Image 1: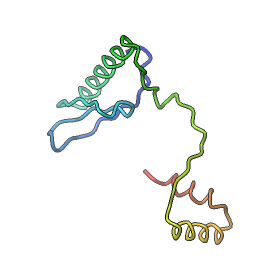
Image 2: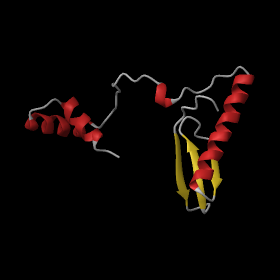
Image 3: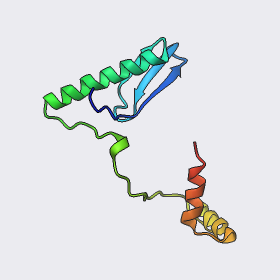
Image 4: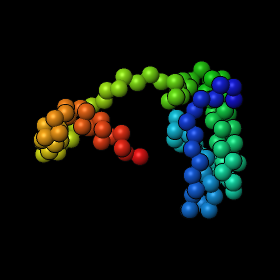
Amino acid sequence: MENDRYSYRVIWSEEDGEYAGLCAEFPSLSWLAGEPEEALRGIRQVVAEVVADLENNAEPVPEPISIKRFSGKFMVRIPPELHRRLMLEAAEAGISMNRLVSDKLSRVE
């Protein structure tokens, strides 16, 4: 597929005993193979076929995450007690709660 900018990942599937090729923009699709490289090739081919089918039927095609623009803002609801603890931790560190949470999130893998 030309200009394929989708987000792919290959993981080992213990359940299937093979590598699974996945695409974040198409979570319902996967491809199983004995080697990781085959799983990647397989999922890329499946995505190419699905994109072509969507285009042929004038249906919307998911935008690749890699080219989406993000504002850097998102809202999250947390329990009031956690909100209080975070505010206290930020105040004690002399930083904003936004900075504290951003720092904590940057360490998440």
